[in-house]
Length: 359
Image 1 (tube, rainbow, N blue to C red):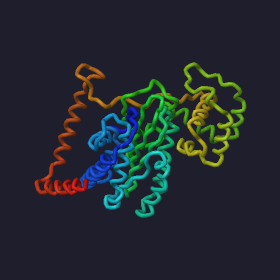
Image 2 (cartoon, rainbow, N blue to C red):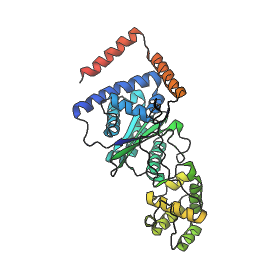
Image 3 (cartoon, rainbow, N blue to C red):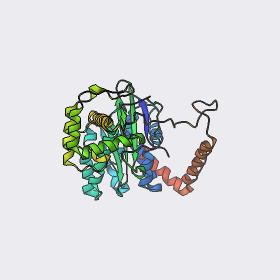
Image 4 (cartoon, rainbow, N blue to C red):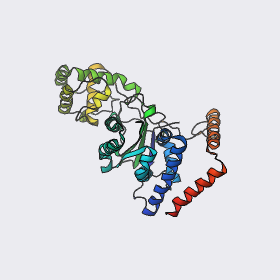
């Protein structure tokens, strides 16, 4: 299963009430079936798959390429689980704009009622947002953040950023069971039809490990670093550099270095948690680290194409028969698992009939 990023053209407007109400009812039934059959872990795994998420949106009534799908599907799921969350053991916090800011409060409220580790989930929520907005600077400003979690503390995050100039939105997916390191390629199998030649900076790329180590070294010895910064009068940047001299304000770098005095910097997660550290400050630190230690950060867009099996004419690439056959086999197994006896079918139809009687 691949998880990661999807790029979508921006579509303005919102789902009409008559559609949204139906989306809530349908999504509630879908979630209940998945959780009752497979458990909350499987739902969290599926919602973290950008292709499955997109398919769910299509089933619920959206065009496949509509950017509004993300916020509306998450909103419908949140409303659908509002009453049944405690029975299912599956919870949702966050949303678009101001709702995203309320995520910590909503997690706390759930923690008080269920005993789930709210502090840890709040830290996860904060760190995931910081990674996608600061460590990975691809030109998409986050405006939507939703975290799904269960009583066992497993979680999945769906975030979306917007690039107003390109009129595209990019969606980021996370799943707790597949995150080994928050700051090193946490989006496994990133999917997108759009790949940029280069981005501002990608500190989550493996090629940035040297740069991250250099930044950590700088912040562990702040007094020495401040002395080095004062020596840097002129920035002689190589032609290939994508960090502009105009991006660098040494005063801001000094503030971040001084703020690091109050923290014990063990790893790059600690760097991202320094108060006041934003995208520009991180780029500045990366450049200072390169000037002093010669450690270059990565500028690679982490997206890779994974939507298609390939084409019979070799475009966008030849069909991989092994992957294709594997997909068919997976679908056959899924169909077999979905088979139920006639009695269970009748009961399921009755439940669905009750759902749609309320429309």
